[in-house]
Length: 204
Image 1 (cartoon, rainbow, N blue to C red):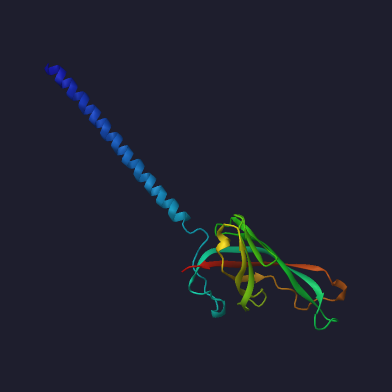
Image 2 (cartoon, rainbow, N blue to C red; image 1 turned 45 degrees about the horizontal axis):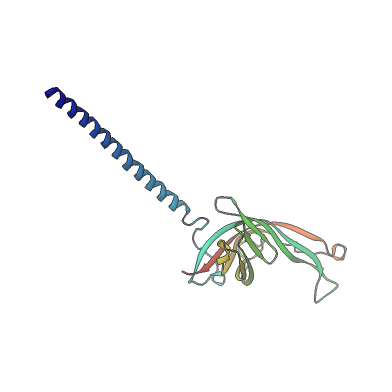
């Protein structure tokens, strides 16, 4: 009987150790899963969002709007040679439209920028803006910095919330200062440019 009792006790201890090991593995798995979830949340909670840029006062958005997206534009400003409205014998480069690819902060394709001016994200949302204020910016050879208000939004993605847009950190994009002439009337000129766009939505 003593031998049987010792055998049973040995088996019980073995099973107890197995249960302890299993419980420890489960706790570790739960902890690792929790940590992974936190990491994913931390990495994805505010994608493509940094902090409000430092801009001239005229280009600041209302304090009750929140920054929802920052993108980099790489493309061209398209100009058309036209006769001046007030002086038909004088010709000038008139802005026709921008044409640019929008990249997020990870340098991944976010959307595109085109006539309107329109910003369209690949999630299907888009916004059309209207210039409210401008500033020459620090680079005299670059297109100006702008503050725009949204006049139309569509879709259900991130840009559908937009109420204001800032264009800053511009480089290039300016038409030639010497204008054009009647020999090239109707001709398009594509000038490379880069800029950062910041999108804001209602809510602090």
